[in-house]
Amino acid sequence: MALGDSLNTLTLEQAKRLPVWRRPMALLALMAFAMPIAFAIWSALLNNFVIEMAGFDGADIGWLHTVREIPGFLAIGVIFLIIFIREQVLGLVSLILLGVATALTAQFPSLGGLLFITLLSSIGFHYYETVNQSLQLQWLDKKKAPQALGWLLAIGSGATLLAYLLIVLTWRAYDLSFDLVYWVAGGVTAVIALFALVAYPQFESPDPQTKKMVLRRRYWLYYALQFMSGARRQIFVVFAGFMMVERYGFEVHQITALFMATLLTNMIVAPLLGRAVAFFGERAALIFEYAGLSLVFILYAGLYHFDWGPWMAAALYVLNHIFFSLALAIKTYFQKIAAPGDIAPTAAVAFTINHIAAVFLPAALGYLWLTSPMAVFLLAAAMALVSLALSTLIPRHPEPGTETVFVRPVPNPAE
Image 1: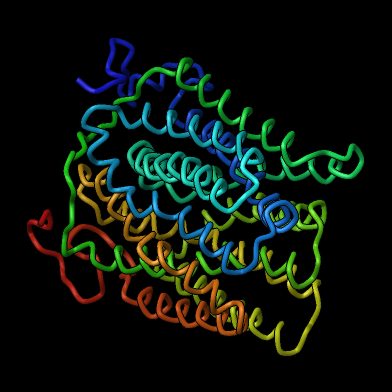
Image 2: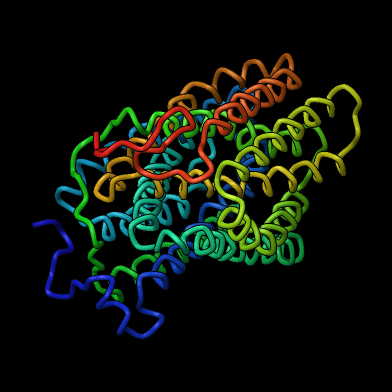
């Protein structure tokens, strides 16, 4: 019996009789709200904290993000853990760990200390994200999933926007410290997750999940898209914000204002993008995303040659996030081609694949950054072009047996 099994376990059909706030979608929304409070505040303050308090350079920030991604690479461990712990419980416990580790971040203002506390918070973040993606695909109806995922993205953006707004309004006005803000942000996330752990029943997914590693040849395109997405995203996550502080001298309230503008845009755009994916299909959505990202990264590289200034860099940052929102199409593509019992183990495998490059890329590119920031962004543009080529292999109507444009439907697509 897995931890979390009890008489208080409901099927998704039974859960429809619960009050709206206790239903599975409400729990997904609450988790979508809670996670960004800790993670977004950690991200918003990180570049200023490591430069001002720990004296980081490009190589140091690269190593920090390499360590941060190790738990993502080891997300496959979720498959082992769900033998003993229900996915819902594991996700919320991981969220509590993220909150507690975030709260303690400012207590470790050195390279070694930050590597340690970042590793702990990253375990919480990546195991939560792995389970969260699995639960979303199990609990959401296929026909409504793109729109629902769009709304969940908007809720997460709203939580992040609220956190950023509070920093912008209070950081300089009240001379806040890194220590206080990290404590409050991490504490709020941990408390919300603890409440969800106690207040919600356990929801039984309609299809039992395979509790072993699943690698199927017919999912190869999904794996490839995940690998390229992880490699490309790392360059942006590690170096785009760092560039704002290092090159243009953004202060905490300024970088947070930029993040806030980005999230406000995402709140408006994400539900629309979810509807667009449902209408145009995953193939068209991903082709559009990767074509746009290729151009954005080329323009990022141009900042170091033409020096278009901070406003151009800020505009590219916002635009990049809009394109990133279309990545929900990778989730719904997999949902359409997957055997129902494969969702949980494949989510873990995919998260590991997504982080293969992330383990070594930030550290390696941190040293390249010291000599040529332009080359770092040009490499990201090349990765986006590879993703663009892969996205053209998605059929207009993917389903089991028709996973790519190369295959025709087969009687038994399970293997």
